[in-house]
Length: 98
Image 1 (cartoon, one colour):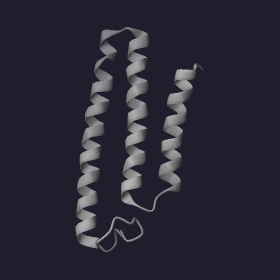
Image 2: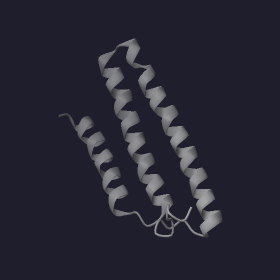
Image 3: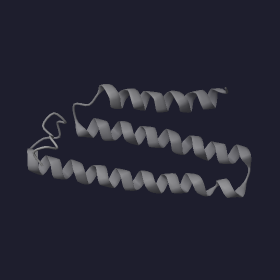
Image 4: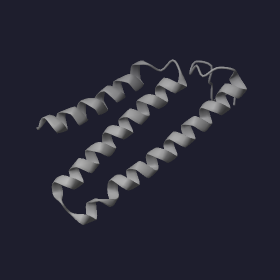
């Protein structure tokens, strides 16, 4: 495994660990998700450049599109939960009360 692949895997793993252990605020969870998406996007971009195939160049753009949609949905949920519950603590969010 090259150092480039190791850095992408470690960035994704750190994002997963951050999502697993720092779940107090919705903002921190969204930032961890965005770091995971960014590491996957960069890994897919470097993978398509290594293969030098024109059919693989569309995959990182689709991944970036889904990442932007995920970020917009996450920010909308953040605004909605802050307006209804008064804070972005994940402990205050209960699906049974919504």
